[in-house]
Image (cartoon, rainbow, N blue to C red; front, side):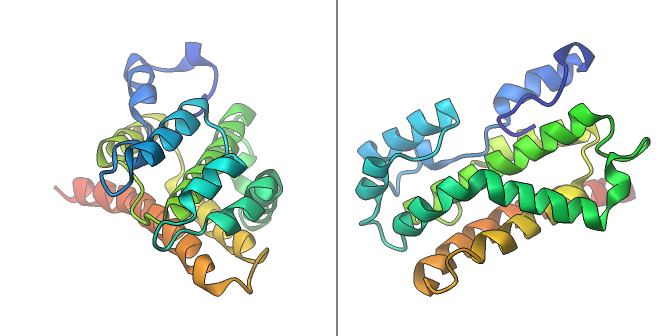
Length: 206
């Protein structure tokens, strides 16, 4: 799955193993709308799967629509935000982690919670940069193929992202201008995952 280990690798197909390194959804390292120095920030941060540093946020804060200041507030809350989204999702759909559910056995659930953290990381990268359409089309396509290969429950992942968005925006509801950028980045990624389902349904009709 996205940037994370989806489970015991011995259980994965060769196709899934080949897709994992390609399923890097962030497009900012190669985005010409950013300066070379800013692209370098995202190249290093994404390679290490880490949050942005204060000095990096400062260097991004001058971009149009950048929510770098808000991102600095949100990043320390990432683990708690994912935990809240996970808890609410399981309250709504407890069958997901039960035998036969889409996130069973436990390693599948753990991989999807890691994906939510990674998705939040990339959303906040986009918000800090001010680039709402922050994804890389080839990486997103590879992620779609990987999710198909691993039978990831897309409806649950989309709902998890929606809940993550809701909980994220409760932290700084007063910062409307930059909050709009964060919301737009979430909506862009949610739309991408919803497109996975649309593509799958269209394929089933042909």
